Length: 79
Image (cartoon, rainbow, N blue to C red; front, side, top):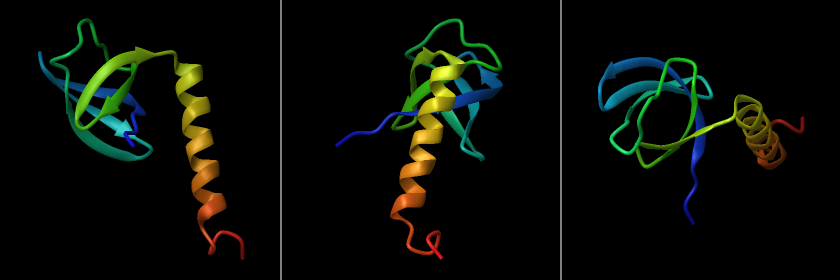
């Protein structure tokens, strides 16, 4: 199973590289598959590549759903 995660672009490092924020974790990703990416854009990231832009509201809803699923699976969070 593959999972692509929404991330916010925080810094453009070069024409083909950016720093994104993945739920608080900053990571460098490739922009080689995309054009016209700007700081503040949300992109879908899979295996280190930004694949496409995503609407900010949709990105926030998806991230909230991931957080909820993680908390439901965390037995410590239940205490």
